[in-house]
Amino acid sequence: MTKIILCCSAGMSTSLFVQKAKTHAEEIGEEIDILAISVTELDAHLTDDVDLVVLAPQIRFQKDAVIAKTDKPVMMIEMRDYGMMNVQKVLPEMLALVKK
Image (cartoon, rainbow, N blue to C red; front, side, top):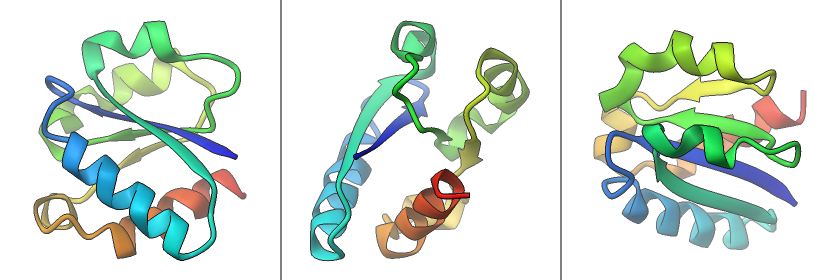
């Protein structure tokens, strides 16, 4: 199972994205555990079993700080894909980073 943390500024705007990603993962036969959190909570959730940290567009300015906290891949969701809730595009990109 792939464990993904999705961070935004408050942890709330990503909840819909997470639900859509879980549904799409089931549709394509992928097992994921994806959690939406505020970037301020990231330290508490960075465990060894996390495979990927994903950042919502509104916190793109914190990317370097997040990279410095983990040896896991860190990915940004493009503003357009985030706004359109384009999980069909973004989820495969997430999984490709994990499977490298």
